[in-house]
Image (cartoon, rainbow, N blue to C red):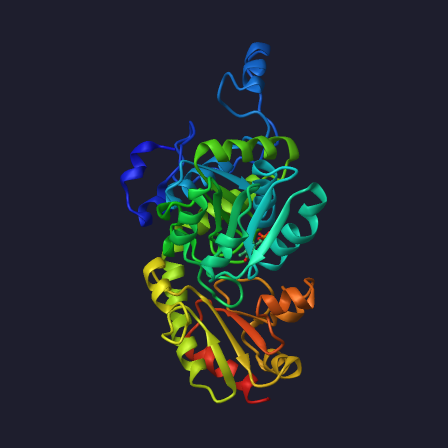
Length: 394
Ligand SMILES: *Cc1c(COP(=O)(O)O)cnc(C)c1O
């Protein structure tokens, strides 16, 4: 990236980091929709392919628009380097395939995103990579799960959908004492609210599909951290091809420019909505890190700049009652996506967490009465009125 940018604050980096202007001196970032690049000579082609000469070759692994996105996100996370991928799941897959092999072991939390649980729990064992799942908040359980062959701790904080907070610094401490790497899925907080690399974490992964885009338009992902690790991720991506498209990279760049103001506003809306829900007679429990009732309220306050934009709550009753609330809402979108400016409402047990076993679901605390709101930018009054209509049907 343009190194002088490193001194700027997050707001400035989000708008400007990584941009290299072309011969046309464009103001907005150019989008390079091309699968391949032309060389001046046979010798240059050979030098580019061998890596002797830096430069673009083929958009599976080199594209200027993707490179700007990678450099900008690296700057925001305080990372030495970043590799963009086609989706959040392909970022996690690439990370595991790049850093773990047959016989290696991972410790991860039970509250991980549903597809991540599937990947680590059901697919990776076929390739000889085993994962032990432990409670997000129980540091002693993470310590006890470490084995001589443990390669990686993988966590996501706050967790989805219960917003449980993992103590990043404490987990880094126990992992590094045994030479184990730590990766954090920073999807919910983004670097605006939490910078795991500053707390000693080795790698950050993102589903850029969520807040980094922020408007529900494209899929994307990224792995950021020290170059010694991202280089391994790059080797996997170059060969296996879970690459980010330049069009998506361009959309994500535009998303990053408003990341800070969106997250601040959505997080403020979420706190107001969570406070209102907690007083609602038909709501039995609210999960939101900035409520004093949250079990890790103090830790969240130390570790995050605010509570984020995800609020989960349980209604009195089970699936039938939860579905009544969902179907009674007119404004909130019934969709599994989150991180959008449009507020979304999800019943995790029958959607995002529907494919995992009932035991895994129970371990993750995803009960039938649980609903998740990913708070957007609408007026909080309108959101409350809509939820009131749904809740009144129970
Ligand atoms: C959505 C999500 C993912 C997966 O990202 P995709 O872009 O949908 O592949 C991973 N982790 C978390 C926390 C997510 O919310």
